[in-house]
Length: 570
Ligand code: CAO
Image (cartoon, rainbow, N blue to C red; front, side):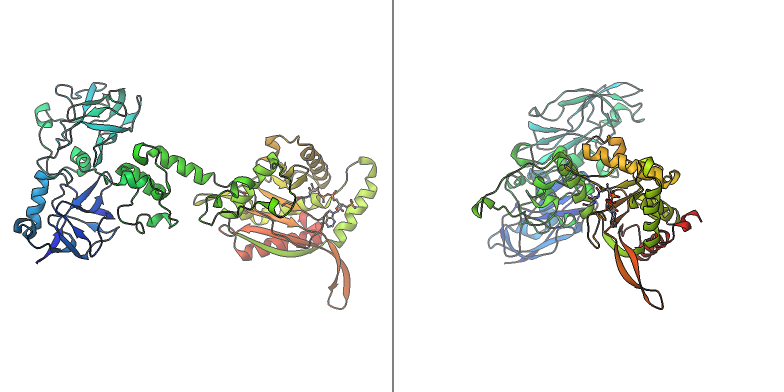
């Protein structure tokens, strides 16, 4: 028994490709022509078959490796009595694959003609000329089924853009466009059988496509043409034949998306065309978690899109969040039949609770929150507030602590502009306006009305507006506009109680101030303890934007303004 090094054969113009699937394991017995690995370029994938029968002694590649012609795939202990020709020369064997194996890689002989994709005499010669795009030479595949149409009438397509996916019983491949232009008419539909020369669609060509003569264009592709420019790429764009069956079986995995495929059992990669795989990779989607809607469980572009949409909106409110991990890789919510333990009554969540719940969930999960707790000495401020209310009784406006807080917060935002900002990708948007939201507790749940241009309003005006908006909130009469555009929010539980809490940031804002109940406490003034009215301030901030030191300074500054309100005028 001899030991063979099985190498990547000539795989056409694919200079370096990724190993996306290893189909055998050490110790496995393999037959000649059995697929060993699947490799993939950005537009195509293909299986590499074994040139000989034997036992896999040592695997030399793993998923994620880059390979090229001549790279060693594995060491094979040749089966006794195997024909010498298959065992000796992997190159020869590869050559044999080229001509004999339908499951083998594309060969020069079977390479389709790059420009033969247009029907004769219809090649675009001038702008807006109709071009019939046909199925090129796709090797041994005849009468293959159209399983996917990747463009629609009216679409602008680029040359080499994939138009349709066809599938035989063992492989699928994408057929690229030979020309750029606008799709005038589709000539095929899903389910049609096509072969070399079948018209796929008619394009209104974008302009003169090239300077070749029709005779030249019908020739074989030149060796140095980029792979993607040849339908050979399509001929090589095979996905694992077994994947279709595999994809219909659920694969339970929660590994990070970047590693998808690595931990999968052999032959269990999801069933999708190369461009769908690429699309999924670009979006960081783990295809093993996407359910294919096409026949045999094949995953389409739309399946990937739906998966992403679902993941993005997976900040579910109460009921749905409890259904299944809420889009996170966490164990499912416990399902308990509470009636087993005593009488229960089920009531649906209010509309506000569902909406605010979804927002709170997303914000809590997506924003790295830190809360800085401080206290403000509001002894004098509270005395002023009481005095103003005594003097202003006839005005009907009650001066509230909330109004003072809004005024002080605006001054602090001016001093610390990063608190009056929002993250937009890698940019921080600094706002030059000061719209302040405040949490209002209503019978139906939490809402956050917004005071616009709070910097331009006095304390009395702020007190009047907050009480009007809070009343509207309780009546459920706030308009959407009255809850939009906030820069920073205040959540005051002072009238209710508590000593501190962690308010949840109201995205896309980057900070929120929680206010708890003030209390008289003994404060050391350097000589003696004095009874002072202290207001707890809990500042939650988005740590991606705001450093802990900045938060401590903001909160301390705010406390200093509340301790001596005259500073606001400075
Ligand atoms: N410490 C002690 N007492 C306070 C106080 C504080 N920090 N803030 C207000 N109070 C007192 C007031 O003095 C007033 O007392 P009197 O009735 O004796 O005058 C009482 O509490 C009510 O205060 P107010 O009329 O000034 O109302 P407010 O500004 O406290 O609250 C509003 C207005 C809309 C913020 C409030 O009604 C509300 O909905 N708060 C709940 C906010 C909330 O739910 N936050 C949590 C969000 S996260 O789940």
